[in-house]
Each structure stands twice: as C-alpha cells, then as structure tokens.
Length: 290
View 1 (cartoon, rainbow, N blue to C red):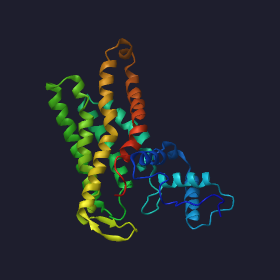
View 2: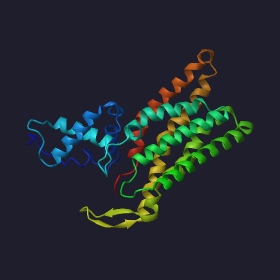
View 3: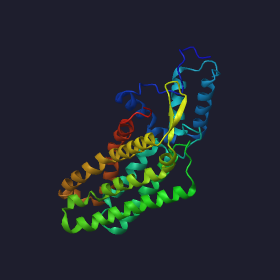
View 4: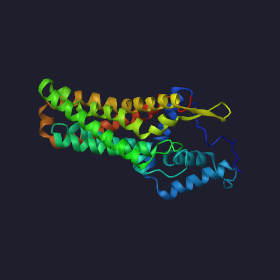
C-alpha cells in the first residue's frame, strides 16, 4: 500500500469544471514526448494503474510513479476499452503529425496535384485520429468508416480545388494561401459527424450525478459532436491563418528568396509552435462531461 493519501486514479488531477483546470489536464495528457515511450513502459504503466485501482500496487510505490503511470495510460490507452491506441492516432501525436502535414499544406498550395495529395494525406491522418478516439460504446461498421473517409477526402479536395480555381483569378496571393484552411474546415464538418454517425442515430449515454445511466440522447450527441468539430477547427486556425500573412511578408525579402528550400521546414516548425499550445487549448474549450 502507498504511504501517500490515495486519490481516484480514474479522475483528472485538475478541476474539469474550469477552463484552466481542463487546460492543465490536456497539456499533461497531450504531451508529445509520450509518443516515444517504449511499449514495455506503456504496458508497465497500465499494469501499475490497474494495481493502484485495486489497492495492490507494489510496496514503496511513490505518488510521482502513480501520477506518471496515469499520464502514460491516459495518453496511450482508449478510455472506454482500455486498449492501446495506434501511436499515430493518439492526441499526443497531434503536434508532431499535425505540424508536418499542415506545414506541407501551407507550403505546397500552388499546384492542383500538390493540393490534392496533401489534402488526401491530411484527411487520412484525421480519419485515423477520429477513429482512434471514437466513442467505443457506439461502434462504427467498416462501411460507415469507408463512407466517412471518402466523403471527407472528397469534400476537402473539392473545397481546395474550387477555392484555388476561384481565388487564382480573383484574389490576391495572400488570400490564395488560405485554400488549405478552407479545405480543412470543410472536411472537419463532414469527417467527424460521419465517423461518429452512430452516436447521432442512436444517441449517447446520459448519466446522473451518481454515475447511473438514465437514457440515450441524440441531442447530447449533436451537441458533443458539434463541439468536437469546432474545437478541431480552432486547433488548426491560428497556424493556418497567421502563418500565411507572415510568409507573404517574409518572402518579399531577398534573404528569404535565396533560401526557398528552407521555407517548408520553417513553416513546419512554426506550425509546431502554434500546435504545442493550440492542441490542449482546443481540447479544453468544452467540458468532457456536462
């Protein structure tokens, strides 16, 4: 038995009724460093969490060890099933994965093939993230997953190519840089509802203050999924709306024109600086339970 005061291992360490409490929690859970932790360490963390839950942790276990195990467990295992998640679909991979793909979309927007390719890569990544973090209590069939993936990818490409074609002749070069953001926003509005369509059809479980299931509610599902869509758009918005202005200004300088091969890496790193803050901020906008 641990010598320190016990706490509920299944509840967040911070008050989730406040934005600041949720922000601290998601800064903690989405820490990208947890993506490179070994499989053995993750499995050991899960085992320690399960032991602590039963009050059977090894003698001499410290609070710091329990808290770190909880962090690894919540960052790598599905909250409904307890199964280990695909590393590329974890929320802790949003920063490294998102910065690489978003940086590429912002850099390679001038030609139709580049737009199509990077929108496909982005929607494939989003589909994996949405599936990995789905509500396991509302299972989705393979057909539904396929329809959601194809629909989101098609909507992103149509939006991107449509905006590119329209703005290329009518808009400034700065406005043309916003093609990727328009496509990402449109695709999120399609991808997430379709990926979680069973929740919209059948509703999600509603509980009382004593954790007793009362009913299933489609209204709650609509509210929850709408908040997810909005938070995903907010997550990428600063990087995809501020960086185009920055790059438009910087590319006018002679020194930037001499280092064009470094523009893509620069945008990738800049997006990463935005995402390291925006991933937890966007996840914290709304309570997980209300």
